[in-house]
Length: 172
Length: 302
Image (cartoon, rainbow over all chains, first blue to last red; front, top):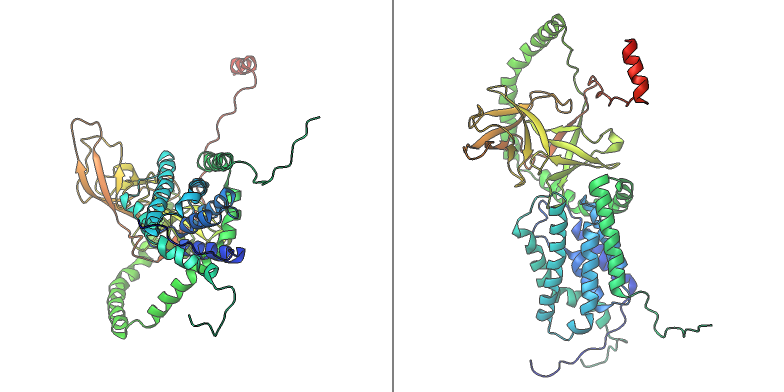
């Protein structure tokens, strides 16, 4: 690492945009996939993102509600995603002070661990209630989601990177 | 009197406390859902909330498949048409004799004082998507409680049984496939008449016949059909074919794997069969005698 990278001062995040991104992620998760194994859980990713970047405005309660909605929509055991997302939100909020000082790919490694913990919780719960083990390919979804972290950071911070006042005569 | 200064930054309870609260709530819900089925009302409400998002998510996929259907090549259509004609011709001769056979069968059944088998009502349904739960084998069909679908009904395609309705929403229903882990279906081997119960193996592709003795008379390729003794599935529908048998003297039971006959992954159209009308109610558990002394007197009088 060479010295400190400059940190850009961002505009405040708008609640409407946060809600919109969560809704879009929900839409993605509820698409009629032929096989959900290997599909990244975008709701978890967006949730972790906002818990890291806006810990005061999201929380474990919201994560729990989102998980419950996913459970009902997917027809899974009620509370399975709620538990996983609560732990995810807690982990993300515990990490939020230090994770942003790392470069993006190291942040992605942190997120990967968080997502894998969430998925392992779900596997443990379902195996305990008599489900069948879905195979290790199931965990590929977390790998893909973590790989999407830099892209998610770019897209989700876009509205906060807008200049305060647009000056058409500015040279750059 | 104790005076407490107002907190400078009010942030509510500590994160660990919140996590414990919500995790506890989730565990409570899971226990209620898995063990007692008390959470159905909450699930139905939440499902209704998620339904618009689901329909919205379904729209682009339906649009795509609709467009693909529209542009299906004419060659394909012609080929389908020819094969269907040929099959219809083949079926026609069976169909002509079917009426006579049915009448004869009804006559014979009446003679035998056997119960006439009522034709079951069936509802046509289409598979919308496979369930998004990687831990179980389920599909979602486009008919629900508003169309008269009830939990427990059998679902078949044109080859054989694919599963059973396990959860009903107002506009959708969830069908658990026979390959789901621990989804049982009573079967009978066609060759020997042997009755057994087939369970999903858990790998999503095969079924197991459990608890059959190691020397049981069963061979590779034996066809298994529904036995019909449960009143849920009509008798004689193809279920699976025996694919592999392991007989090991060290174990009491043989390990028998079967491949399902119907392909739930290949077809979109299914039939939901309604319950047989004439199933006698299950015998009620005998009410315990109010007092042991009284029952003794009754017995003596008898």
